Structures are given as structure tokens and as C-alpha cells.
Length: 283
Image 1 (tube, rainbow, N blue to C red):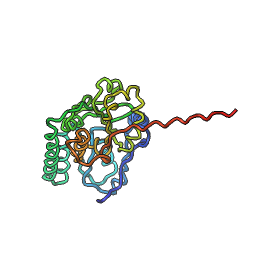
Image 2: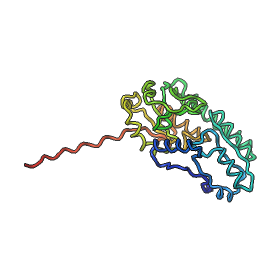
Image 3: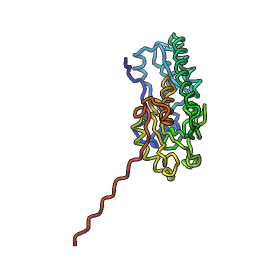
Image 4: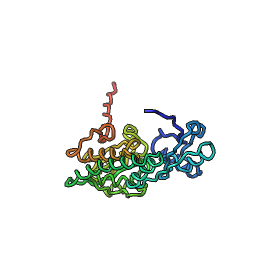
């Protein structure tokens, strides 16, 4: 696969804890600064025919405004721009078709969407008659935020009921007591932009909340981590793979896609370090 150079970078430390990232994002926003920098010179050297960007979330990726500014100030060529706003699955399909059309192959976009929808419909049909768990999906750890947009639809297709997410809209931040009030059967933790290893490392922050250990999902071992960066926060062709991860984890007796360990994993709290006995003082 041909690799192209990165032409964007974040104006904050993406390796910092989630609370620090949130503070930095808010600080940039308060000064009307973009979260991302576009390397205009490198972008111009590539002479692209098409630029794909998004207006769904200016924190998650480079915004349409940033791209338009780069084109206006630094590109002699005038590439076409496709800007995505995927609030729900129907928008994800429309964006795929729009990109294919901009590339001059609209029929391939239609074919791709048709295949993906059929694949996902097959999973939804197999969940009929299965017990539907009540699920909360966490998309940021500190502050605590729940997933909205297309995530509630994916959970519905996977045979579960979302107890906090708002379809086709940002669900936003919630106090921990709200999570405790709904006390879901199962919890997904899929922080935006984090892979499994990064999410696993951040779980200690979530587990420090008073009342975490008493949640039904925690007591029964039904907390799952999802690869947000590759799958759960990506409104592209891999939404079908995301649905497979959800179905496989929540209904292990009915589905097996072999995504465990790569796309998702069950969270197991690290055991506390044993206390060392104090040596008796010689007298």
C-alpha cells in the first residue's frame, strides 16, 4: 500500500492524559485557535486533486475551515473538497457515495455501501431473539463523555439498547452519578482517538470514581474496551467491523469474528500490589 506523508499535526500533546488533552482543547478554543496545524507547503507539493475533510467535530480532525484556508493561501491547484458530516449511519453511507462520485467512480461507492449494509443487516437479523443488554458507551474518560451520533444505531443493530447515547447528536459530558443512576448491564469504553493500549492505560482514572466498583457491569465483568482510533470513532467503511466487535463481545455464543484482542477486549482490573510485611525491628 502506498503511503503518503502526513500534512497535519495537533497543536497539543496527544500523549497526555485525557484530562490534560481536554484542558488544552478548551484553551485553544477559548483563544479561537484551531486544534490542528496544516502543513501547507507539504500539501501543495503533493498537488492533490481531491481533499476529504469533515465538519462533524473540530476536535477529532482537521476542520473544513482549516482546509479551505490552506487551499486559498498555499495551493496553486484548486482541488475538489468533500466535507463529511456523519451524524448518523445514513450520513456515513452518503459520505462514502459522495467521495466515490468526486473520484469519478460513483458506481463503486454505491456497490461498497450496498455490501456493507447487507453485511450489517445480516448481523442485526441474527440478534433477533437474543437477550438485549442495557449498554452505556463512554467516548472520553476525563471528563466523562458518552458516545452519540451513529453509535446508538450500531448498538441497536448489535442487539443492545443504549441507555445514555443520543442518536444523530453529540451526547456530551455527564457526571459519574448519571452513569451510576442508569447502572447498565454492560459498559463500552472507546475514547476518541485512543487505541486499545492507550485506553487500557487510562482505565485507572475511570476506576477511581467513587461507585465504579459497585456498578453492575463492573461487578459482573462486563466492561469492554474498544479501539476508538481505528474503529469506534471512525465513520467510514470499518463501521461494519465495529458492529462485528460489538456483536462478538456482547453475544459470544452467537458470533465469532476473531476481533478480540485487536478491535476490542474485556477489561480486567489489575490486581493491587500485595503489601509487604514490615520487618520486626531488632532490639
